[in-house]
Image (cartoon, rainbow, N blue to C red; front, side, top):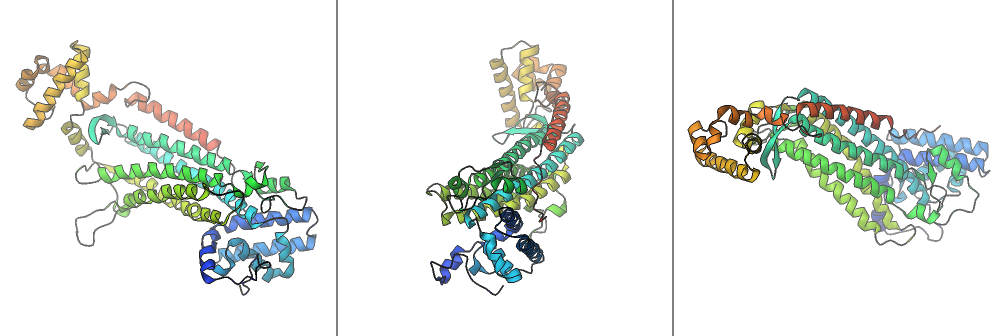
Length: 477
């Protein structure tokens, strides 16, 4: 691409300081929006033909040229020149090289302001749907593993202290429901971006009776921006998207934190395959959960991207300001979430469970102490507060003398409280598997409730898939 002519040369002679070029270029980021930009230009050209700005021969030339440019970009044949600033200028200048002066007519009745607004709307629609579909894949894996691991008992935690026994399936399904809400947020993001800004010009509309309904239908939008100033200055669609990404990243980070903890030597509940871990350059025994750590670390970037765009837009007057170019970096960086979601899917799919370590932790953590207190209330008719004190005293004695509830001698239990010497009563009360079966409330961890929840999960996911938005069509046709 030999020419370095900017689109705005005219009022200015166009010779600017290299620092302004360096700070002002966005092509290194918005090249990722090439499909959206080319699609917008393709449909805009058809609209210009419809309102008699382009004749059929000119239209055919432009459409053919745009297809050639797409091929060049996809084959990495289009040179990137930061002096041309952005994707729009690269396309127009290359089109001029291919078809000559007719290329200059393409920018009739539009501005780079409504053009980039269009590109980002199309991009948010496309990427939101891709993320939603990736989350659906993860949800399917969570259901499959919940069925597979239905009878494995796991320690639940509050304050990172052992709380009560829970089925691993219950733990996994907690993330299933989080991710379904994430899918809904991505669908909301798609819907909020499903509004056409193109045709609004720089700020106040254009001096042509353009056909925005034609543009809307051809580009696959459901409605228009009815105010041209709102159309080119608002970045709500990106903020909605970045918020949804931030919540997803937060959920993924929490899951990764648990994978890191539970696969450590201190816990040893889970083991990741070698393919998803790394070794140490100095310590040969190490098996590091790097994938989980990287995902946990990247969550900070996604959250800060949302905050950055909030701060960028909070003080801007209407309409377009160059500050809005800063929307590109957080937007295109968010695409990395797709690779991260695939990493999560692989870890969920492949982790192995160490049942012996789970049982050891449940016993050492006195996970069924609450069940014993409840049994004293229900079967020995002791007030709960008194039962709580009795079991608390038992646990304290066990800790001080290195016993668990399962191996403390009968005579010592009797000294603490006579009814604890009743072996049938006592061991039935602290049985780990019986403990989870007592949680019969809807949403609880008993087997019948987990099976019920799995069925609800399948129905929920089926409904989500049936109602996913339509694909974003970026083909040049």
